[in-house]
Image (cartoon, rainbow, N blue to C red):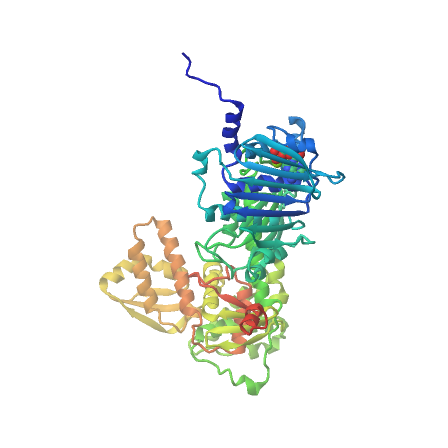
Length: 631
Ligand code: ADP
Ligand code: MG
């Protein structure tokens, strides 16, 4: 006797439905896509119990005839293609004619629909795929479809539906994606009878305006426009908005990626986006981003999953690199302009008022870079006979010959910076205009001897003087060390160590030497420092040596190359930290001005080497809210 039975078409359809419909959000997706395919301009979604009890979509699209209102629930019934050969040229979402049949098989549906030129509409009620009634109905043009009690006839599946809040989150996320993807459509969302979102149509393709309808005002304010085309494959383009370096959240829910106008959740693409934010926002935090990717349709396969959620690219790396680079450059450009573009320095040249910024004694290390930049820029203008005016003896420890060498080095560094050797992609950030001494900043003052306050069109920009200077020096030490001047100390520094520590350190002294610190053993338990980079010339190097000793012990198990690399990097960070101005150091206007100019030309300038932000914008919006000028 045979134990194999063929399932009835009805039962088979219920099983097949599982491929399309797993949760309420899948239904919402199919129905909104149908409304879009029907050229609707207004789409309203009603949800109850996260969509488990009710999903209703009302659109003002083309509607259906009484015949189609019945046919649409049949499997493989579609108005969008009539043969597989048309697949390549379709421009609608649907084409399988599966969705309504599947949804109907596992729920109770009421459909009301009317064609534009029809006098009356049609109402169809269908339960578990079985037609209950079809009547004439008075209704407006378009389609109104209600799905009640999902999986009412498959308890096994109903059990797998998640909590209402989870299903609702999925629906909401999907709805937001449609809103971002179709800004010209008026979307409205109701949950449990209450209107929770209203997004009237937006004329331009301005995603920021859409963000303002969907997210809180603050997030929308922090979005930056992004646009890029692949340099070789020009059919590959990306456009959208991404949040600036001041915004981040604890989840990825504000990241939306679209490929040829389809919302996709692709790990590789979102990883590329996050890589663009490396060193910009803290680890484990996520930006907000709406990115539309346009690719040649023949290089992408969207048809690999019944729910069309997955996507395959012919050249995935190309797209990932384009995203990563565009994000990085957009952020760089924004910070550069925050620091150096829209603002004007008000340099107070009044000598009596200048006295309110006393020359600090504490910043010998910072004096040098400031002085060199002034001199370097003067140098270009100066006639040879004015040269002596520029050379002011920096300290008794430096001979005129050394001083000349320092200036040459510093000049070379300055020209390297202005010659824009950092980001060729954005020469405008590094043009003479932005790094020159033109008065295009409005620096207000130093606050708490720690922060520089800068007036900006859209708020108050704060720079942490230590973090910023630390980053400037770190980049200088790690990438342009050949341009850093070293000075011979007339009175060498002596550092005492135990015999054992000296023995440990001795084979590695070349690491110091490579970094401009001339150091050698002196007797059995001392080191003698004879030269240092100019930025460290007044610093005691005792703790730096102790620190390196500790790293040598900690990392000795690494192979030689890794060992050197690790210690070298750490040494750069430590040297930068030591040489940088500290919180509590009073800065003159000139020094603040220089710091900002240097920061504008420094790579990775969003954070200090330890990951703290260098700059922060207190937006005019926030200020106005505090004063209750705005709600
Ligand atoms: P597909 O979208 O793949 O064609 P569906 O099962 O989603 O398959 O829909 C079947 C057909 O029903 C569509 O081809 C379309 O003709 C019609 N239809 C569905 N929803 C709507 C709607 N909102 N407005 C007008 N026609 C619709
Ligand atoms: Mg469809």
